[in-house]
Image (cartoon, rainbow, N blue to C red; front, top):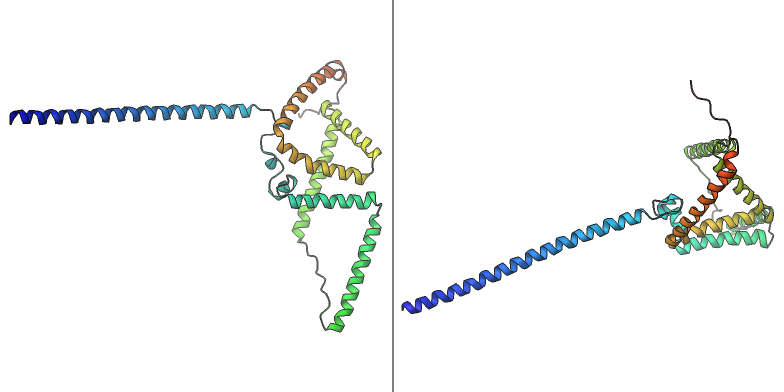
Length: 262
């Protein structure tokens, strides 16, 4: 009996040893797995911070910090320009192209178009009004146009503010304090005059519309390539501008400064 008890005790001790070994082994593996998870999290956070820092250092055209959609003001106008709905955007472009073809290619005049539209409207109204007497129906009702006075006043104030700001900007540029801006504006107006001499106003307006309607969506699609090319171009332009400024522009006398307040 004593020998049998000793055998049972030895079996129980061996079983307990195995259980404790297994428990410690699982604890070590779990602790090692948790340590590896912590290391992975640290590596992930460090890589994300490095990616964010690298993204912040990327050159953006015109110092852009927001997406193109946000730069354009967001909402439906930005969706229209960026072709979020291709049917609506394509319809607008097709309508502008039809107007340009009508007036420029077919040489249709605006007064002629207005006259024909008014004649068609009056003829339709005349036939409809006289036909109503035979079929015992009421004549067509022409709706009245109502515009709130507050809307008109706000629009007039906005136009006045923009006109005054334009005059102030023109005055600042014309005084020649910022020579770089002055030369850029003169070069832009010269290019505009050259384009105006080669085509009429309608064609120029249509070209500007097509450019403004297609360039943003193309830039949004290939912004990385365009920004990289723009960075290289800006570096070269700054080099040439520094040379021109040192040799010629710095020797040109600038406009009078503002009088200091007493």
